[in-house]
Length: 519
Image 1 (tube, rainbow, N blue to C red):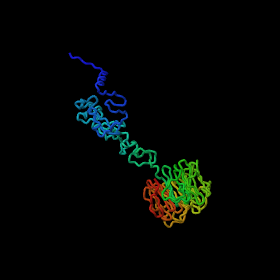
Image 2: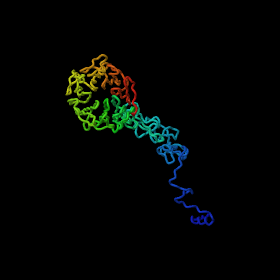
Image 3: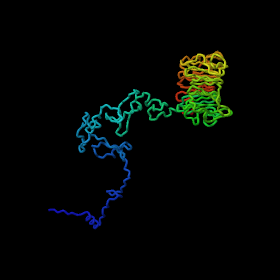
Image 4: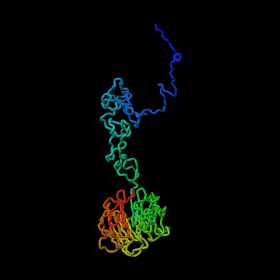
């Protein structure tokens, strides 16, 4: 019978020491069991290809080297997709026990089939991909996500998603599938929504100009965001940038961020109305000037303003009117230069010695001097109280020059009255030197939406085109801008218009040029 020799571990250790053999080191916190130096913070070696991630197992799928992908381990390896249904894989034979475990009619990939998930009977090639935010893959294709287009704008809902093998999520790109005016190719508008589905609201859409005012020497524009830019002469600080330096390119007006209306005169004053209904002015004359905006009217709920030289009039929300004189000694004082105004005005137009108002009803009334028939009441008699303009009851826009005025009627025609020395009434060649009542501007039978009048010139916005008449053009309106203008301003020396996302200006007989410095 063979006997067994039982030797204890301590005895072996003693014998090895006695025989001169080195004793094996006992494992401790400073070494690894294989004798190498161990460090729990050692960074694993990054994978350099799929082969370096292969764990030699078949049933757990093919591992991939994809550093940074969702689910990647410290080496950058991503686990593979099992080729067979759970608990249905033969590792030794490298095949599936059941080739269609989920009974969906497609064999598992481990059997040479094309079913990417043999545990899910709702997932197989040929299945209809369904729009779902859970990114469930029904058709075993990573490039499909379900085509849902409720608003029929040609773009699929962003709530339809799929996830690739690398964990990359792919979704539709329509961020508002219930609104056909919101999709990736829609132009971004200033409306507090993401029109182009790029994840940003409005972006710079609110920085584009929406209105411009121009006259002799300088001009200003206001953006949808409320910022104001000015350019031109600046000897009185009328550009509002804190300097008296002339600017050929537009500069931002200091501290003004909520303007909705801008107006300026032919000398050196500029004023703006804000969203809160306050009015700020800057600039001046030879004896006084402000290079930055100062408060002129606050807490008055102003809805419209107009400036002529140093006179400013404003209509309040309740239909009343307040006028102030921007005095030469830098003191703003109330004035009654236009006499007694109407009580239900919505717009005011200020001339050299008169004012006109558009009422809520569409009627127009004027008061003040009337030497040239600028009150439009059929006479040349001065009126100290607002008097109706003859036959004008349907105005939608109004403006005044030095001693003339014009209005747009509901049908899109334009009528003017007052002085016609420079053909600023637009009545054609050989017209009388004045008109005491409204007369139609020749050649504009319909389509006008805005009129702008200066001392010697006038322009109308007609279906996106700007048509002007007066001293340098004669009495028949001439098309200056045949483009998609949305607002314009006539000016003595230079006129301007908002076109697309920019401001274009032109002098007498000149070609419109884009103003630089406006984003």
